[in-house]
Length: 360
Image (tube, rainbow, N blue to C red; front, side, top):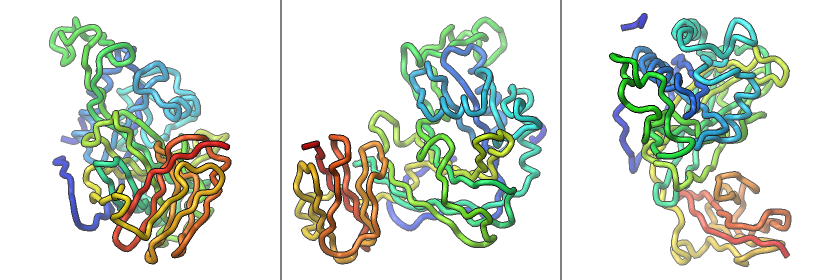
């Protein structure tokens, strides 16, 4: 190496994750449980993260893995990543076909990117309720200098550490099982109950992030923000989930214009816990009817409501509005049948009610 976290759950108090003009770097690795070279590449990535505290790791899994998600597959296809055990640093490289590279090149790429400007100061604040798995955060970005020309995207990526299962798509192939002296020696081929770290579970708003948050030419010092609501699936270990936020360029045609400008990471459980999913009589001014609903959904709101959202259980917002006191009517006739969450934000916090929607 060229340079030789205590995670706590806060239950009260405001939170703002922000480090003025702090440059951080994102290493995204393409991996698979069926790749025998991948666990060694994982060790290299971990060593680099230990040597460079500014480095944040995110591992995209192959579509044949038990941890696959469609956005990681789209990410791989979008960059034309030729195979597993390859990674990219800030989605940058000397040429379009060299953005994804093998582990021996990662450290040089990290050092190159650490010498680039930070461009943007990132922050996130919000709440997470561990009982209902409801995440509600506001992500902000303020540019410290003019960024490179191109469309800017805000990205929210959710990763999970130590995903441990046995079976097809989880047992990790290991080419180093018989290599004496190697850290992976004797662990098995494959390795059963292998801990998969930094697993990209979700990229909220799609593989290429959220468009329209930043203007074409952002004003230095001006803060821009985006609100995200998300339901954390019950199968994920919430104590090992991290939120990765970054700003990147995006071009549909030019791979050299997709680089990451800056990135931050925060443990999910460090967000302030908020009481949600109240009993029906706990907030009598917040009512939702009829339930089930088909054509129109009626929502009666408390007087101090600032916004109203209707979300799927997966966290996708299907309706949002800056709410006014009194009754609001939502047309749900075009929504798929299922269980939804009606969320309102008031001066006293976030309240959630469940609603069933079914077609006529």
